[in-house]
Image (cartoon, rainbow, N blue to C red; front, side, top):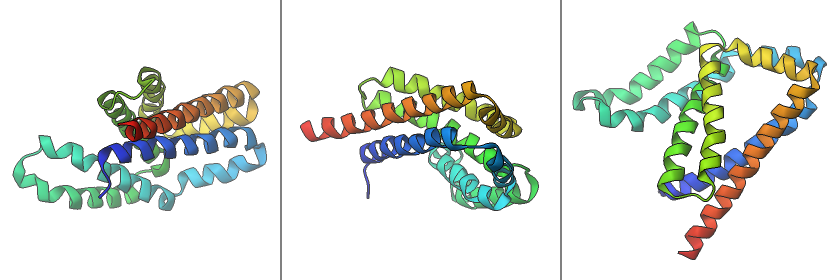
Length: 186
């Protein structure tokens, strides 16, 4: 089984690489792709798996606060609510991504201070920007569509958004590598 510190390091490195892809996407997106992207955002099939993963991620955090008799119901509830979300929620993919952003923000805040990650205050500050963005996205999923339209129409949005994701990705990769180096030194 993979240890929690290893999961944290892999999460930092994986997030960094994903953020680099998002940053590149900011500079590659064009007007002719916007209709295709908007269809993808509304596709329930693409939203089901991230929604299920977000709810499964909540299970370990729910264990300490639910009654013992409810523990066996957490996994079936996550599956049932994911299926219900598939049938009853519009814009499931942006909502699920917003939920993952929120959970990731809490996870990085907790783990970076627990593990004393170098530069963790900056990492957590940037992560909280993503988590707050996730709150807005989960509540108003049409904001993702509006943001993509702004990125296509305005070079400032393209540059600032791309730079934010690049800086966050770089900070995550550096933090992950420092965590691996700290572990090897100890």
